[in-house]
Image (tube, rainbow, N blue to C red; front, side, top):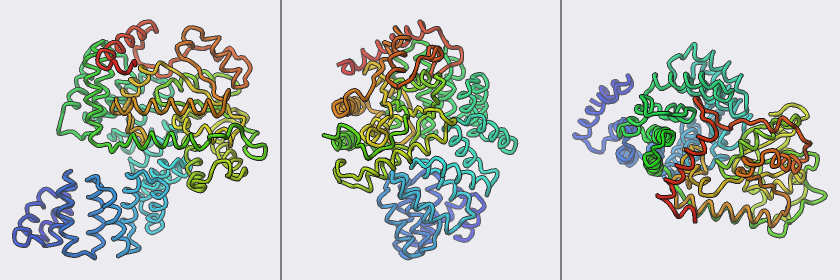
Length: 567
């Protein structure tokens, strides 16, 4: 029975194999192979807790089997028991030091724990043991991207695609890496080739839509998203992007399709969350603001089930990071890369950073490079190196090295001779390091009314790490207050070194605000900076007056639900 079940399992008929494994266990409940194999079936069916129980019994019967330990680690990780998963995988490696799959799975757990540099090292070990395994290179690429190594990640994605030319996930990862670097034309070229071989891959159509959107080919982008949905109606991310880039006039068939996915309890949770945010956006457009708020709240609640959040820890880290610069009011004459003059637009997401970047990037001397993880990675490396050493005691040349390393990577993404604009939100945490490493950098913060800003964050589905506080309004409110406290500290530590541009004032005195912004950045006047352009253009877009009316009505509905956000 066991062999018959295994044959079915290996032929892709796991559901038919399961009853045979169950029969074996009725004869012998401790039979290790049957427990292990049935555990794998339950894991593939999404029942991680039962998989853990079954594979644990297999390990108990045969504690030295590295395969059992490795798959127990995978099951524990799926069940959210990351520390236990790590321990199981380390035991597997101890029993079989050349077990490449165990290293790869350990890297997966380290990513789940957000220990990205360790994940990179672990995936590198898997690649060394099995250099021809495309999946290991793909996993390494994802981990490198998480850790902020842009160019290394691109290389690893390319290696995965070279080893397996029809590897859709790796092609998608490579396209995303190129798109994040502002290389949309290259993305389209890559995807046009890939879609000839993989015409029914919905994720590649989605990625193509993203690149087209960045090139402001809105109708083509919408067609790509619709094709992705046609191929997979449960593709929540495609529903979300289509909704975000469309001005809805009524609850049409596309909105209804997203709503059905949102309500489908049999669908994967992540796809339902995407669909919920899509529905919220559409309902807000058609002035069903109470319905929109209900959809956003339900989507955030659903998302929260899968998120392990510790806002208190995140808030404490903010205060601790800024406090290290108490008494450090100026860069040192013998430390820092003085030759560079980058512009950092900092702040929480949805604050209007893209609007500021677009204004600056129209200047003939400026080029935007988007949201670079480079500075965060370099600061993290430096903090690991110096530990609790006071900032005043860190050797001056380390700040010079940090500044040079940042500019070397960032400047490679821009044309020769151009000043860059970096809009990575998390850079607000690193203002002190920017000041010491890049003394002539300009730091700009875009401002919008706090209640509106918090609502905009809450209504955005963040899939990146570090935004777990965004899906609960009370935690968001606490984090926002901590953010304001940190910005106040930076102003106190470095008076006159952070320029705040108020988006409300920009609306009423555009030229005056832009003149002041350019002057702070050390730029001469350019008429091109006055040109109007929306940071998030949409199909069927409305006149500014209608957008303002719609948003005011939306905020009024929110104020009735959460008046505390207004103080």
